[in-house]
Length: 221
Image 1: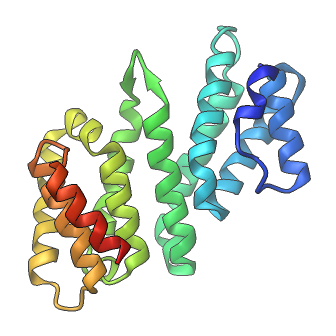
Image 2: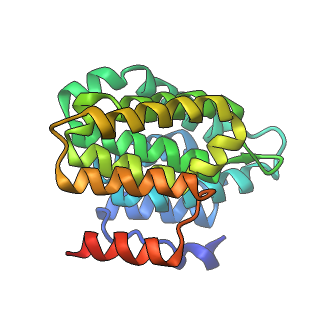
């Protein structure tokens, strides 16, 4: 896999992390994959901009690992660590909203990239929904960082989630709509993001060209 290493944007990481991930991508059998899984999660919880790269790297490593039916070290440790972080998510949010947002971004990214028979992993559907439901609670809707995270993830994986369990998506959007209508302390940016998401789903997870031009010109302003 050494030919694809250069495609990953690892420049923002420290030298130790870069070397570990590059070595894993070059030859997963030559590194401690438990250590690699831990490093990827730790880095993702510190830097939400790394999450997309983390998803691509996890996908590549799991694809490579799948070539050996007896090797599940990376996948097992990644999912175990995700479960651990999900379990203490309330404490994480109390400690740091930014770290909590990183956790949501990472869980959603893994949901987006990791598939079983070209379908999202069933084990991740409910944890992802639980995270998004937390983001539509009144206190989260008054925090622009959390609203931005909610909007971004619904754009990225909303349609997949709805296919996996449409009933919970209906409930999520009822809560989102109520928050938009009833929450008086929403910032103008939060209102714009929530309105755009409501229209996005109503349009079948698409925006018309006119709507897209309107919303994104408003965000730019």
